[in-house]
Image 1 (tube, rainbow, N blue to C red):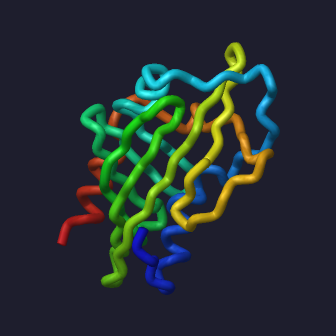
Image 2: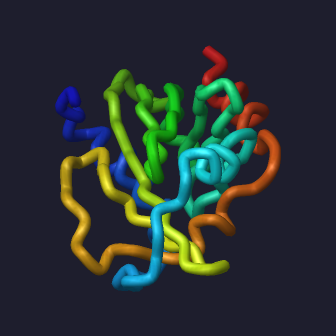
Length: 158
């Protein structure tokens, strides 16, 4: 991954860290099993992530677009599922400056009955998760349909 320009780093942090800002870390129960790739595709395909500080639309064709709700950064790229892991690879651009960069994020999903845990396993900044960084609630942030394209188009208009 290309180094992120230092001036834009806090902006990118606010986009991607928003995903887990309200989540509390937990240990993964021993009885939890990895979700299947098919289950995970259904979790993301055609859904919009409505995180505290960012939005992202995971299109059925494998593309993803999004923005920071503070109107500072937009991003676009692709998402894919392998086993119980969803990965998003994006190019991001600051709206008010010439700063750009690339980022990758991956989430692993597990379930135990009706309970679901997520682990932010690959992080754009290269930091590693701790063994108790599993959290619940990510599924609630995913809403059916495209709730992103209209605002994304406004923000990317030049």
